[in-house]
Image (cartoon, rainbow, N blue to C red):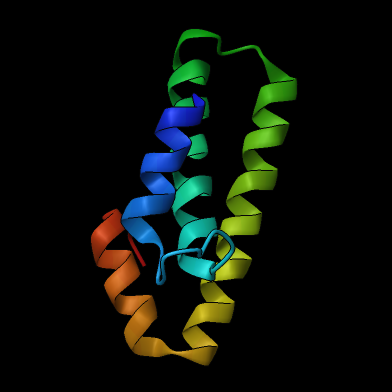
Length: 87
């Protein structure tokens, strides 16, 4: 992910002007990295170190989404819809 792509994701999902660490931003960044790694693994099926990293990213995203669901279900639902994730 390039610096410009990262900044675009942060701008789209930020809750405030200087927000770079909210749960929404973190989940959006993880989702874009997960998408990139998934595409990489479609080409390089035997790359087990990348597969392990993908599993770690998916687990981190799952934990952040569970936290957001506990704290604010409305924000959780809107984020899931915006990212088009199954839940």
